[in-house]
Structure formats: structure tokens, C-alpha cells
Image (cartoon, rainbow, N blue to C red; front, top):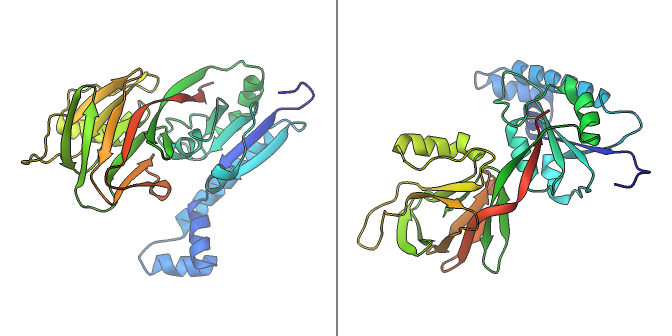
Length: 299
């Protein structure tokens, strides 16, 4: 960044539970009535809002007064322009960092946990009170950066989906997903509940559950591994369908090629179905390691 410019801190947040209730019901009284009619209490949402507001105030107070600031909501990330020298702060749950990662190009991310003990804290490792020290250290390149691999799914002659955790290919409803899968020189047609390709970051979530229940021998990658693992969900053996390519790994430049045999197929990343890409019959795509990495500030 130019020497004449002070660092810019970009704070990324998402709506709280109370924000969602108020957006849906209009007033706190209406939200409270709705929850009480279902045997719930709005008090927890109010208390969590107070915790978030306190964390936001503490984190903001740590930013030097002469630094530039910007704040962006998760829903607006696709319209926000990050600059090369930005210092990015994510205040929220781990999923917020995953939502954010695909919009960055090397900017370091400081994950702040507004509710320690409630969140897993894999990606949001720091307390809001540490924001000031972490930001000063990041501006002076005095922090340890953990580079986490990402996965990309590229539709041939179409869009690209980038994800920190995993990408999913399947049917848009609960019907069987039908496609042809190719790994190296091996290929087969499959009918299944869809498949996921996971990074090491995603290996602690959805992929871990699949691998554990099936006792797959494919080793799940660690967050910094330069490899991916793929798992086909509930593959069905039939006269026209095989079940021999249901799990494996992708290293280096290796690519998993999929050709849709569905009219209502979907592709999405990190569980964001609202950002899905539709797959029609005969549409090919390739999944591989992405060139991008999440640069996570680990202190």
C-alpha cells in the first residue's frame, strides 16, 4: 500500500439472531410473541445481541484512531471491493470466515469470537480485546500466518465456485444424483445422494461425519495440506451404475471430472445453497485445488 495511506481495517459481520427475528417480525414485541407461542423465549437472543454488541465495541476500540475503517455485512461481500493491503477482521462464527475467504486475494484474516465457549473457534480464535494488538502486529508483518487450502469447482464454459470447506454436487431435491465421474484413467456412471470434495478445513465437519460412519480408509487432509478428499454419498449399485470410485484424494494438479446426467443438478460451496450453480444434462465440471489460500492470522 502507498506509504502515505494508513492501514485500512475491514470488519466483516453477519446479522445476529435478534436481527433476523426483527427483520421477520418487525418489532421486538412481535418477535417475543412468536417465540412464546412456540414455547421459546426471546431473552436468549437479546442476551446474545448484548454479547455481540459488547464484542463489537471492544474490537472497534482497538483500532488505532488514525487508521481507515470499513464495515461490510456478509450479504454484501460479493459487492465489496477489497484492496491489496487491507487487514480483514471477521467477528462471528467460523462459518463467517468460510463465507469471506472466497472474496479475498491474499489479505490476512483475523477471526474474533464474540461468544467464547459457544463457537467451535477453529477459524475465529481470538478474543475481541486482542484486536488492537493483532492489527498492529499484522500491519508490521509480525504475525504467524497459517495458509489454508481451498477447493474450486469449475464448470466448463461456465462459472467457478470457490470454497474453504467443501463443494457439493448433486440433485437440487432429494432425488438421486446421476452423473459420470472420472479420476485419472478411471471412469464410471454413478447414482447417489451426491458427492462432496473437501479441504482440510472442511474435514472437521461434513466430510468427517461421512468418513466416520463409512469407516473409509481415505485419510482426511489437515487444514494446510495440499490435497483434497472426495466422498460419494450412498452410491447405488445397479446395472448401469458403479460403486468403485466412491472415495479418494486429489493431490497437486489432479482433477476430478464430473459430467451431469441430470436436468436439475446443483453445485455449491460451503453449504451456501443460495449461491448454487445449476447443472443440466451433459454439463461437465472439474474439481481441484484452488490457487487461492486463506491466510489466517494465528497470532
